[in-house]
Image (tube, rainbow, N blue to C red; front, side):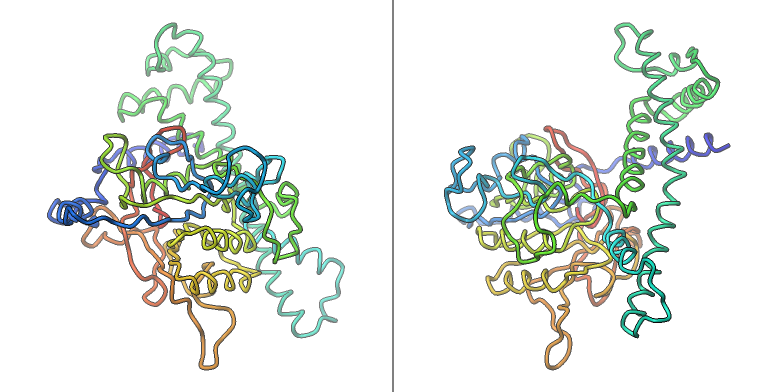
Length: 458
């Protein structure tokens, strides 16, 4: 029963993704039948004699494949730096920062891939603080912290338990598919794809593997999907669940040993390495393509902006970004000429918000625009459940103070009308400023590939 339900669920998700949407729908207009932003129409109407200024857009994200065929000509290049000489030629504090900087690595070239959620990091911190402490003897402030700790504990423990079972099930399915591929590859000779007939004739060494092969074969014949699509979907889900269980909700995992900074020193600026691609650059590469993939080059897809340069700043691991890194990324972007900073990330806790606030104020002083994704929980956001936020921690004389250089973005859907707001998008009449295309967005992916993705990031 468990296997059948899992297989049907996966196949259903594949069928949804197979729904055909124009790859450029975000550039179209309602007149074309899609609620895009009319990019194509606008470029046709622009006066031909305009000479636009180049705008540097810093993408603070998971990393960017700066050699992608549709991005390499639009990457910001630090002309004050000589590549690969291991010298800080422009004296900005960062050695060989040609395309930007990576705050998730060390000088030896080692990089953080995964990290905890902030709630797991805080839980680990308070677990140590309250270990063996008699709660009745705590003062009022300490008791408030202890109560918050108990809430965090519940989130982390229940979260890890929730993912544990699914991780185990997908792990078994992942192993079964590996067996099927190994066995079928030996019998397929020169054919490139595993067919339904291959699976029906599969003779595995255990009943479970044989049963899975039969179910997939039936669905391939009835649903029109390929074995490769199914295998890719299972692999993706398995890897996501592994990330959630082994790292995100694991309070005992500590990635900061890799960075080798003094993490407690929030004023520290100069650490990391120039590897702006990192171990998993899909998210950042996809976002960079949405912004600036080279237009009208008959390759892949077109970005929104035609005269921009992408500065890549790697700050977001497979988990929650850290306040110190976010602040330093903003400082780096501002100090190296960015006019716009894209921040497609967010989290539920910000223990050092004052550090991020200081960087945001610095960007405002330098007239740099910050654009932030509202998040994908399908819930209403406020100033205390989705960080970073434009509301400063420190109040002004007459009440709360807000960053004037901030745009918060939700995701709209290609279907339009009643379905215009994407179901996953966070929302708020007070904190979300604009909705823009964010479903079925076709954009650049690492290694010269292109994929569709969705989210307020897009």
